[in-house]
Amino acid sequence: MSAKLEEYARELETLGRGLGLDYYPVHFEEVPDSFMMEIAVYGLPVRMPHWSFGVRYIYQLIQHRMGHSRLFEVVFPGNPGRAYLAKNNSVQENTLVTAHVLGHADFSKNNDLFKRSQEQLGYKIVEQAANHARRIAMAIEEHGEQKVERVLDAALALESHIDVFRGVRRVTHDDAQGPAAVSDGSFKARFMNLPGEESPGATPDGDEAAQPESLSERDLLWFIANNAPELEDWERDIFLAVREESFYFYPVFACQIMNEGWASYWHARLLREADFLPHSDYLDAIKTHSDVVRPHAADHQASLNVNPYHLGFCMWEKIVEDQGLERAFEIRANDDDFSFIRNYLTEDLAEELKLFRYEASKEGPISVLDHDINALRDTILAPKYNFGAPAVQATQIDIDGTLHLEHHHETDGRGLDLSRSEKVLEYVQRMWRRPVKLETVDARGTPRTLCYPA
Image (tube, rainbow, N blue to C red; front, side, top):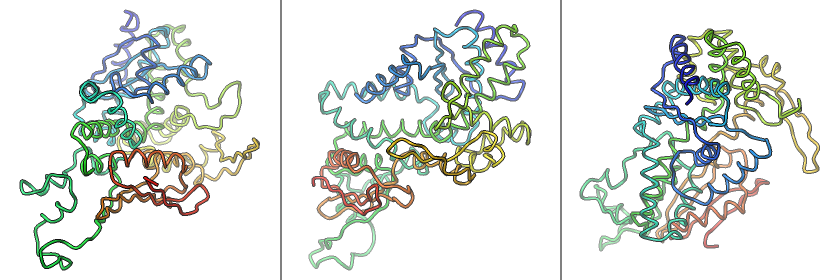
């Protein structure tokens, strides 16, 4: 960082703490645009290699060169936190970004969802992700790139299928049973070692009756890692690494509107109250604020997507105005996007922001459906349920090892894209190494059973 930016950053930190911001130390670093784009796409400074990240990088690069996106900063919460600023930004732009980062740092330290995730991961996700990458690199050396990539294909296809309510650390069946537990991965053998009287269905010679095992498990990464009959240790290690990183990303996903809005509120407020900033520097910085929180797409066109920076910023300003800063700090600590939108996106604010629900036909015309506040809240939150993934649970294992999955389409309120579902089912079977069946509905709501192998 330049001497001028470092001076501004120290002043902003002093001002922020004086206004009540509370955060772990943040390490700032200015990096080239290309590196910024890489860590934004990978989600972490060092992460496991996979072709899907390359696809995302190309897309992001095209968007950037067409002027449709611009990266100002990438922040990683922790103790200490890390913030990467674009070296090509002006000092004034990075002054605003520094203030924005302080808002993020306060949010990630004090929000309950972020705190729970960070505590489970030891506040060291960057180091842990680098360790995951090293272990996967060792697996590539030992087993070959193609084999490792096939496992990563399956694990990353399921990266959103975790159970955030059960936590990162879970007791496996073997751990619960102690030394006497069977550890060969066989459900039948594990069941037979449970204490208690002989099953009424057992045959005279002591063999159990052929009965399927029923269950209800939504954490598919954990379930496959711990129960797939023939999974090797290095494959299990990859599944658990992807799962651990998913727990890190979940709060970012579930608090995006709150978090970006909070950081935007604070960068605007800190700049406004930073009397040490020359007037010209303040004006240059605040222009960037207008770009970040604008509600429209471009040239005053109506935007058909919610800008989380704009919506969150407007909601926080309204909360502070109506309920005070102390109440805002409490909401920042206790809520996520679901409660935030349902409790604080009021009808008056929605009308002021000109929010509406719309319907787009295949032919192209777009029609406004309504401005109903409850429907608006549901529409904004719909993509966030279940980490943005279909609600799928493992429900049964047959005596031949067939795994049954069930899509809770009533919860999702939607059917599945069958072609994509079939591909994911192929990935699951690749790791389960027994037949897999999925009960779901198609886009029209018609019940469907997908099987792999077909």
